[in-house]
Amino acid sequence: MTTIVTQAKKITESKPFYALTGAGDFAVEKARAYASTVQDRAETVARELPEKARAYAFTVQDRAETVARELPEKAKGYADAAATQINRLYDDLATRGRKVVSRVSGEAALELTEVSETAEPAVAAQATSGTTAGKRTTAGRTRATTANRG
Image 1 (cartoon, one colour):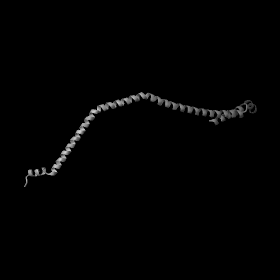
Image 2: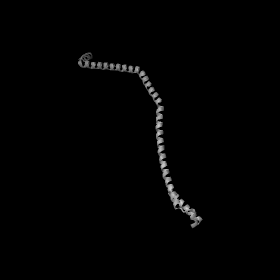
Image 3: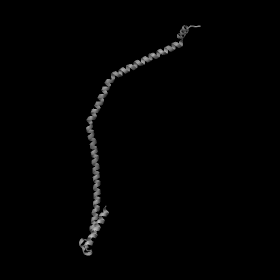
Image 4: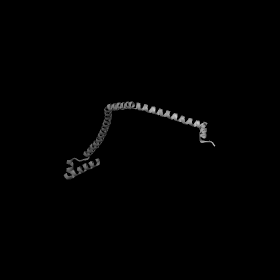
């Protein structure tokens, strides 16, 4: 019967044991190197971060100042463009309104001409049908003409 010490000595002197021990050592070495690299990188970032933050803050501040300087001019440009469009619309609506008024006025003038041509003179109406009847006839025609216009 072999003792435990003998068996341990056999295992520790075997090639698989050495390979496993070598693999463990290799993993520890790589882990330490990676940890060192990560730590170095973290230290570098930590050192560079304040400067990068300052540079970024200056960039943002410069951009904000540029926007603030340009804003009144841009706002004026937008306002001018809007005013131009509003004035153009106002002019177009005024032109359209003039055409409507002209058309309606022309129709009204034409109706007045027709009424005056078909109406009998007040004197003639009084002489032929009496004073009251003549006034009613003329008033009735005027009301009819006015109603047709609306």
